[in-house]
Image (tube, rainbow, N blue to C red):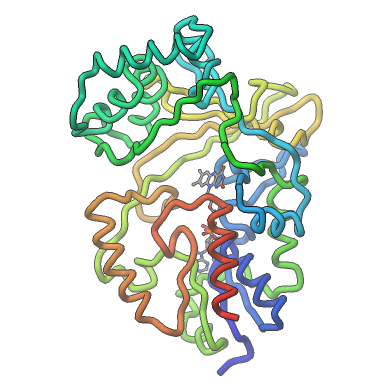
Length: 367
Ligand code: FDA
């Protein structure tokens, strides 16, 4: 009906991958984005010569070769390996929970000794049916690991005591009985050299993108421009919040330029004490080695209660919100002219590789 085959709402990763595939297939696409930047939450700012992950640390990891090969066509990835540290009561520990962590925590030197410790503590917790997150964690890993690394961190993340949080938030707590600090088990991992903007610019190359344009402010005019819409914004907003507002947790980022070349020696340090108000400090230069010798950029991450106008980061997938989302999903499924995709439209936390996979699959179905 209009000059475009597809109107794509949102220039985040989902919208960018879908736009790229459709354009490659000869479709005419228009992308509208309400922010003044492209890439959604992958967007990187450049501060003091350093690529700064503006919406939190982003590490690409996947075992899906097609996804990996696809993103590597648009950006070269470095060999960054995520090996975060945990700071607890003045000491540093390796994550994820592995033999290095157990050695620092208990002095145990063999996997057998570590297993015995954990089994003793799990038995001492004596939890048959976990009724909340605390009991769930105690039954999985025992008291020492729970108190040092889970309790304070999780309570800051969710803003309430672990005894009041549902057990389902933690399904598994993987324990590794090797001296391996690589956080992800995936085959491929890295950060685009030059930052995520390189990847997004590559995906959106030659595609018309209108920045600073909110779909809802120009809805009828935009809808008339294209045969079909891909919508990657919030699903409750699309349907005028007719069933209510879906809930999220949000984050506040405090970014600082420091007059030293290396502040913490690692990209990610988690702060697991309840008394320290932030959950993580990210030192951006360690993601890709960008930046001068004399300066560095760090970001403290403070979880907080979501209010209207905040950035919706983590969906709260409890029973009430899931039931509300199911109602929105029924409306979305019934709308044959609009496709819904991505973390906001599907009210689900997705890692980047999952977003790429879903956007590739959707474009294949459309073609
Ligand atoms: P995204 O939110 O990025 O894009 C949607 C776009 O639509 C936005 O640009 C928005 O402005 C726009 N939009 C919304 N409404 C609109 C409207 N009405 N009109 C116009 N435009 C509109 N993943 C991973 O693999 N490794 C990692 O290390 C991390 N780290 C991480 C940290 C933190 C703190 C979070 C919250 C998330 C991660 N992720 C991650 C997940 C990653 O951020 C996520 O997979 C992608 O950003 C999802 O891409 P989308 O395109 O779905 O959403």
